[in-house]
Image (cartoon, rainbow, N blue to C red; front, side):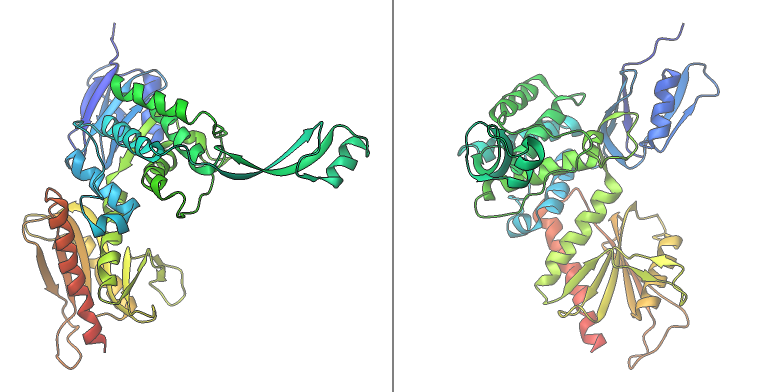
Amino acid sequence: MTVYVADVTLREYGPAVSVPLGAADGRALAAAGILESATPDPGRDGHWLLRAGSRVGAVRTPGGAVVRIMPKTPVRRLFFLLGFSLDPARAWRNSREGTVDTGAHDDVVPALAHAVERRIDAALRQGILQGYREVEESALVVRGRLRETEQIRRHFGRTPPVEIVYDAYTADTAENRILRAAAERLLRLPGVPAPVRRRLAHQRVRLADALPLVRGQELPLWQPSRLNTRYQPALRLAEAVLRGTSPEHRPAGASPLAVDGFLLDMNKLFEDFVTVALREALRGHGLTARLQDPHHLDLAGLVRMRPDLVVRTGDGCTPLAVVDAKYKVEKADGLHNADLYQALAYATVLGLREAHLVYAAGRRPERFHEVQGTAAGPDGRAMRLYQHSLDLSLEPEHLLTAFREIAGHLASGRKEAA
């Protein structure tokens, strides 16, 4: 008789692991697409071969098995990338401000739960944010304004009750709803330590006057303002929890996930971090940057292409450089042929003399390849395809310095374009 596991630990892009797993749970993992692969083990009955890809975190299958995926990047650095992507202005001013407090936890879900709870606590330290919200209701006394159309439609002009609308000063605001939903979401995740769970439950009680979010609804909208400044770090992290992982709050009609948990896609996180960091650094050079800038490879407009970042002049008209982020380790020979072909296509369509690829790791900080048959211009220089390598183990201030150096290189294209 096969005894199925209750807890599986995988490594990001690590080797496949054979684990005893129920057929329903294995199929759920395969269908959800959260792993690089999930297939029955042909050599062992009742076992599945599980291999993690770029997603890290933890999920719980319908049968109750918990799958944890450990990141290659240290958790503290991973959450710096996340915090910077969510709030670049704060992190760029001071790299320490952009650091998300993960406590002593070295696993994604416990670190996330700790970070969200600490930020909610900081947001609520000066009291619960309140605001005015329009309320429509039936009442026995008149308060606010009479809804004449509803009064006639529902009660044929009789009173009481009366249909009224008024502005209520309440804690049931979009900001408090989001924070409450994030706390409730984290309380359901596998692997949240008991002390953190108790503190999250306490924060949920503090936010009890905010209504819970309804299944299938979009997250409520909020606008940054002077009044909610102290809430903003918590709100951005809470939205990352809800938008990235919670099927309960996906738009109505979206197909539900077969598994439940929290996962970060390292490909997307690295791409967001690189493009946002470069965009912020380029502002110091008076340049603008468009993220995910849409173009077409062919004249007919049938082949779409979307570079991660296109650097443009301050007015946004003239392209100066193109950048694509790759969550990959540079090969021993430094070559990723498909990436170089992609960069060449971007540079050709945009009419640029160079293109840039930014990798998560590599042997050298920078190298370039000159493309045959492209020597042109006053200097007779061939088109260059640059490969930049970051070291994600560096301290935040050193990482940001590396981006300033890359931004300086990108800005030099302005002189050549002129």
